[in-house]
Length: 250
Ligand code: NAD
Image (cartoon, rainbow, N blue to C red; front, side):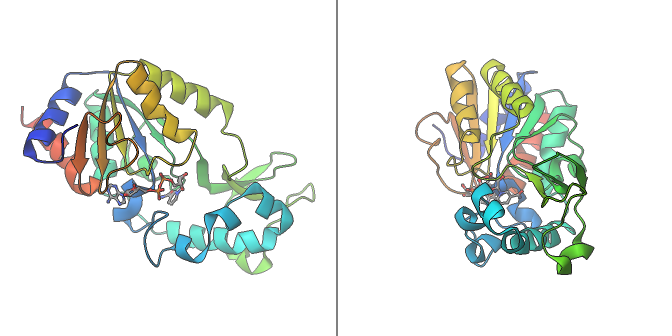
């Protein structure tokens, strides 16, 4: 495992440049430089709303109005954010042909806004809301905030169209991600603490399939000393654009 010095950046660039079969797996850390706190940031949303208490299906069913206080605040945080250089670097790697998909745990849609084309939103997307009973969907509407948990035409409460703790990952996202992970040559894993399963299993599947793993994170994770081949330590908004710059300088 190599750390994030210039030699590691060059090695990561060479690995990516040598493949047309890479994938990226991203977590909350890639969006921290866009101003969206991850689960750990002090003072962030998650330090006021414990995800185990607010982001579970059980909590939604027990008290939808309480859970919607947090979801409206999250929607308010997400409404004005923009992609950062790390999101744009992944879109460029796809354009150059070196990665063929981004699998994201994030619900902020920033990979779409950055121009990535093949995106698997493993945990859904907070732009829409869905009725768990009849599956009707409609856009998230912050203007309804004062009314509390939104109601569906069928009479039930609606929830954000994201996977809450206690819900299963949509079949398409799960099977496609696993297939991509098992079959890739290089897997980039960016800004995830390696703790939320089954998303955290994807880098292990890739490694079992013979892929090289490049990890971008500000801190070491459970991947770092087990399956990571190259560790690019630092903010992804700095390391990823540098990798792209090195590829384009060739
Ligand atoms: P996490 O919050 O558990 O971990 C974030 C990781 O990113 C940490 O390892 C941290 O060291 C790293 N990190 C922080 N800043 C970074 C930076 N600038 N560059 C690189 N790495 C950085 O996140 P997770 O593993 O994705 O799990 C959290 C769950 O919560 C996921 O399911 C995710 O969907 C959800 N979530 C999503 C968002 C979002 O959509 N932006 C935000 C918070 C949480």
